[in-house]
Image (cartoon, rainbow, N blue to C red; front, side, top):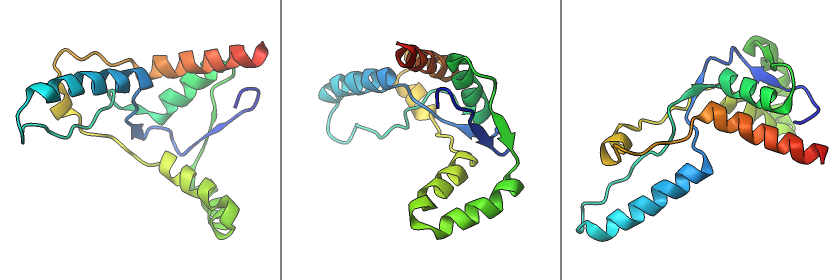
Length: 142
């Protein structure tokens, strides 16, 4: 997306749960160590994610990291017809599905994670996205 404008489908106020890869690695390592200490049946399944953020926050952070203006927000009613047409063409169907998913809420309940790992500090999603975009832009310029 570096060098190109991108858009946010809908208002961008829908919320998503994200997880930085280094946070995933940290949770896996700590969980593996704890699993060895726990007895049979004491291992639980946890949703692992940083606190939810809006799609607009993430998109703005990426644009800022790339040195671009904030992305355009396109109301969903304006996207319905193009998405319906894209859904009829097999190679474009996944694009329409991706836009629908991006415009929906997808927030994980992480209360069990907080109870299991009260001292766990996950990276701020917005800051991580901005840093990642800035790194990508620097690589493109090199």
